[in-house]
Amino acid sequence: MVQVRQSTIIDAPIEEVWAILRDFNGHDRWHPAIASSEIDGGEPADAVGAVRHFRLADGGELREQLLALSDKDRRLSYCLLEAPLPLMGYVASIRLKPVTDGNATFWEWRSEFHPPAHRRDELVKLVAEDIYRAGFAAIRNLLAGRDAAVPAVARPSPAIMPSRPTGVAPSSIPTPSILTPSLGAEETTRAILVERYGGPDVLQLKQIALRQPAPDEVRIRHTAIGVNFIDVYCRTGFFDLLRLPGVPGMEAAGVIEAVGPAISGLSVGDRIAYACPPVGAYAERRNMTADLLVRLSDDLSDETAAASLLKGVTASFLLHDIHAVRPGEVVLIHAGAGGIGQLLVQWARHLGATVIATVSSDDKARIVERLGAHHVIVYSREDFAEAVMRLTAGAGANVIYDAVGVDTFAGSLAALAVRGHLVSFGQASGPVGSWDIGRLASKSITVSRPNYAHYTNTPEKLAPHVDRFFTAFRQRAVRVGQPAAYGLANAEDAHRDLEARRTSGALVLMP
Image (cartoon, rainbow, N blue to C red; front, side, top):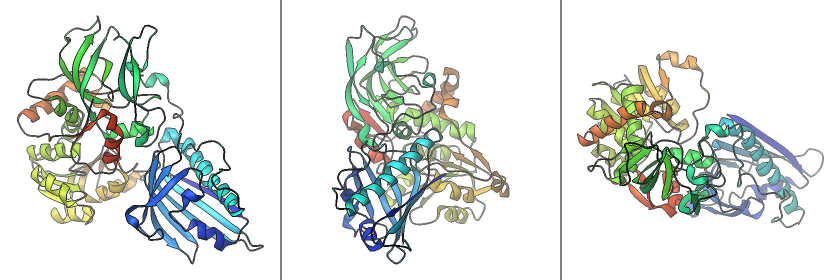
């Protein structure tokens, strides 16, 4: 957690300054980074709970919610719901006080959030300088009668155009071969190119170079491309997997079009899939080394493979290696209607566990019930930790699979049984922050944070999980629903829907 605090003196009466700042829908009239603003659902701008939807000066978008507003104290606070950058758990407040000597106003603007470690300094500077200080200058200009559309800070805000993360060794991030044209390159392919980290709008369809495969590579023509939350982390720069400019995506299915001279065991026309780095799957065609490719049998469609391979492999090591689920155990699965959640629900029940799932709505509850969950908790309606304790007569869950992050971590600890195991394998709502390890002793809790690559980065590690998942699929221990399909050009829409939790199950892009 970092804290940012900036303050200034505005040479104007406090009533005038507060009249501008209390308008939760008024930033577009004074802040240089905001092009337009509207309140979702037509709520009053000063209603606690109102959500404002910003369109940024470069076309990006973000959404913030009003948490509190006091005219008496001239104070308001708000939180970030959606943004182009990983300002996880961002909560901010504005406070005004009259200056004792004179007719001026003291203005404090402060916030706290969880940045990714490798971008901490960049994001702290961004918030302090290009949001807060630029806002101070803009209000001064506005109150002085100057044109508020002319920002005091001339350069574009890094909140809109962030730089590449620092401290990343280029050799640690393989550059997708389709982005490395040689002098003799004659071909191109369409791909989703990310030229700056940010929101879904940075996913742009481009024509990029496609060189001939290297001796140890094959060329793949994609037929379906998986969309996963790790792609969001790459797009925002939260993970160091995507080097700019680059093509995101770690999962796809397709047909081999060409093979390098050092390749054996694969031929032109073979159907294959993969779920591994390097990123680059959001493309019609790409070159890739062959060691982690998976050959597809006729009973597995390209769409099913692209929608489920990464999730199925993940479910395999979560349920069998990280925590070997045994018959009779109580298993709690967060986001049970999500792509990996659906597989975990079915597979854990097949292994003999009592399955409790959490979801955000009644519609998603019905999906999870059909998949075999014994109990479903709609967490927007009741406290899931209390519900788990009630359902287990106070015993708690033996293992909890949590990909949500900060919103559920504390509750997950509370819902565990003595000697329970919390498997934190994602952070869709933000990083969990720092925790005192001594607090885990009250129940002798085990916490795991597995890394996908550590279980899948060699053929020897990957093969058992692929075999286990395909066997479970063929035995109908798990069923893979029809994924929601988007055109490759509509990758931006897929990411928006995924982040807004408007989807259930898997998503694919169709080239």
